Amino acid sequence: MRAPFGVTVDGTVTFPWTGTPGYTIDANGLGLTGPDGERVLCVPAGRPLPSARARPYDVVLIDLLERPERLGVLRRAGLVTPGTRVVAIGLDHRVRSNRELERRLRHWGAESVRDGTVLDTRRAPRIAQPRRALILGGSRSGKSAEAEMRLAAEPYVTYVATGPAGEGDAEWAARVRAHRERRPAHWDTVETTDLAGTIRAATAPLLIDGLGTWLAAVFDEHGAWDGDRAPVEERCDELVGAWRESRARIVAVSDETGMGVVPATASGRVFRDALGRLNERLAAESEDVTLVVAGRPLPLS
Image (cartoon, rainbow, N blue to C red; front, side):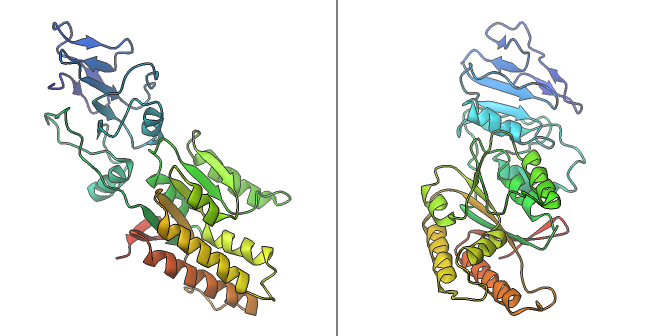
């Protein structure tokens, strides 16, 4: 089907073939079904998503820049499948460059096309995603936001929180609350330090945030700050093994160590060294490793 509609810069949808025999428009005015049965959906910014009662669409044109999680909702409802061609519309200067735009769309399984492009509704391009991604960065670098962006359009995501919930610490609780509020509402959250077990049991993409708080918790659990550190090494071995063998998509956030001053305490130096070794081992088992500096992702080859 040759998509018989246009999308203006402001997101207005026009159907120039309205009334043409064989073409029907959905009740919400955003979907079109052609005489061959192929279906097209157009969702500009601010327009509600269709219900899940309809069958999957062959092509979806959607504004993703503000709320990419809307694509995840459509996928969760079964309206967008691996065979659906997803094309971004409403593209403007909300993203700093064409390269950054294409990078984000690739993570979301979408594409951009030139005005006037004739879309082939029978073939969706295959957009490969790295199975294991390690996102490194310093404090307040934007590493968590980068990890969340990558999985924003997934229909099912389990957010693995490894840090404390913040009881008794108002400042930490505010940080945790900010993270929760910016995550898509349909994501699941698991609070655990059993990362190896969680990875082995995963059937949906995981976002692990983060490895630094996990390692600190493991040190606490085994009393390893001033004692035997062999149990910590065993837990790291288990994590690396599960990471290597996992078939689920994983994005993990970790603190980049060793770029600041040398810790003043022996326990601080031990923790820095342990996290640095863990980062190095996981990076060796990852298809994608990215360092985030001031909100800018720097791919590490």
